[in-house]
Length: 196
Image 1 (spheres, rainbow, N blue to C red):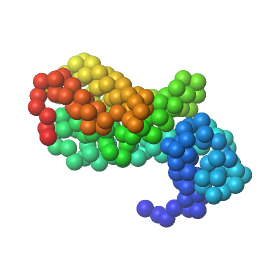
Image 2: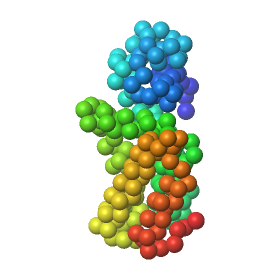
Image 3: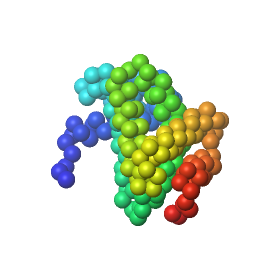
Image 4: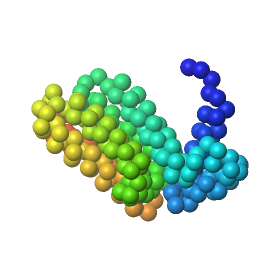
């Protein structure tokens, strides 16, 4: 892997600054000026790398999703059975670094905005499609394709609902309780013992 260019480094710094602002103050506070201040740069410098606030927010959302995707891939690679790979997807959604109120607030604001902004809607569609396809691909050998689709929809809906609960509960919703709810549903839906 080659060395990153100064432009790549600066863009990542700005994305990370935007992420910090969103976590601390909400998506609405992530103006170009506020992100510039967080990064210790001028607003003009932010505009040099991102042509608009929406472009910066899109890059930030893609960055967060890439971190999540990396976690899913690592967990799935370590899993030794189809059921364990589904559990890996669930575990990634409730990992300690990821399932936090500040991340849930960003996700909820993003989902609301995706209704009106096609570029955000595309990100949301890819994220949900990838999660569902990972689940379906690993459940179809156990349940058949149609039942795998039904269970995947139920699992992803349950995960989404628990993320909403995390965002809406003062102090967040207990990660272990959320994780256990989804794993218990998987066990019921598959009629099998959990792999771990």
